[in-house]
Image (cartoon, rainbow, N blue to C red):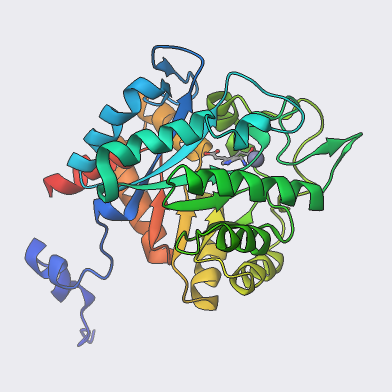
Length: 326
Ligand code: PBG
Ligand code: ZN
């Protein structure tokens, strides 16, 4: 028998050697912490399908953000759970809407220490729960885009550091860019939910945001999970519409898309590890079937390895705690 000259194990021998040749890094500042803000209840109310996640009143978001900052997480993504919904999502662009109030509060308190990203969509504010204006059975594109422009403008006016259109309406990024620039907010970047798939993994989020569509589903605007090339077309379009950051969502079942997106564009790339991904891991960990810390680390590092610059995850705080211990 001839023994190998090339021995991969030489560089795996000690922890220090392994550390020396580690290719991928993850810092808490690369994590984005989502927050559900509600103006309904005075107390934080737990989301049953997402252990550890709460709908929070305006009164408690400051301490949540304070904790995040202490852990090194400087970016939050705000979702509104308004007490009033209608068919034109008025509470989404109301200057005293729940997101606008939350944004002001956080910027007043923390200034530039925190980066506030606001989700720019209509579903949480619509009685029917669709991401656009729904007439009959269909969701209209262009009128919805106009409304999204209004929402983005009011979020920027409230002090949002970045807006994140997630409705998957065609042309939304270009139109929001125009509206923001005309309104004096040319310094506010757009994080585009470019490749957002119609996914069953959003189910726990819809509990948290109370945004499940009352009729039909989102397949006429969100992407079909069988498609990969189409995601690249979506990305190219958003790059052309002057998105500042692009996103692939969900993350776990879409790492091929993430890698291709990385190869396609030099824009900062975000992976959104969605609610169902979080709930699956929490459930398995609660049963004692998986080691939560180990799996979460392997998972987040894998998303970085696949090409993500930043990661939106409901486990941002846990992850940061573990990263800071190392
Ligand atoms: C709404 C929105 C959704 C998510 C983020 N923004 C849900 C949806 O499209 O139904 C999903 C997030 C998650 O599941 O964590 N536009
Ligand atoms: Zn939506």
